[in-house]
Amino acid sequence: MTKKKQPPVRMQEEEAPAGPVSNPFLDAGFYSRMRDYTERDAAFSKELKSIGEYGAGKQSTDAREAPSLDALRVVVKKGLSLKEMLDRIVQGVESGLWEPWLTAFGFELRGVNYAKTGERNARLALDISLGSKAQPIFMNAGIGNWRSVAVQDCAQVQIEKPTEKAPAKAYAIFYLDAADK
Image (cartoon, rainbow, N blue to C red; front, side, top):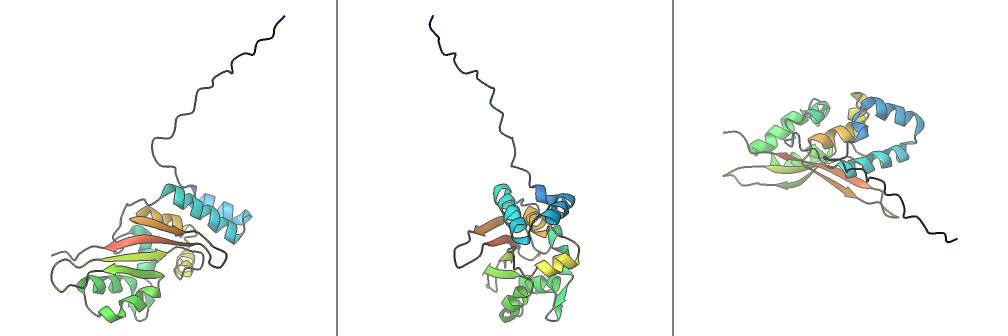
């Protein structure tokens, strides 16, 4: 009597999701439950991994209008609110003060068109890393999952992997579109 191997039963492969993977950290309830049971560094790593998988939402890429930045725009630092600072950048006034203003809120000025004629615009990077200067502002506003919320609006996400000497760095890239004429 010979024993023949039966061919393996083919299971139907699960279909891949049509759209991008949903970021579970957008749910504030999930985020707070997860934070109850997870250490700070591990929670950040999990959220950053999810942000990297999901990518930028591109829902409102202008930093002056992005709903996720509402908590930042009303805070006053260095004598001005972030909303006023962003408006002055678009107007092109006080250009020597732009970088120190933005640094107080956790932004980096990555590129700007300084031309006196034509469209003036800027590229801003919001630090969404663990030690971001924006962290206390969002925490005081009660937005624990602010990184995932900001990434929904931003135009691009940049994540730099950690090394032995440097921790992970991540940025949400926003734009300042040219002033309306």
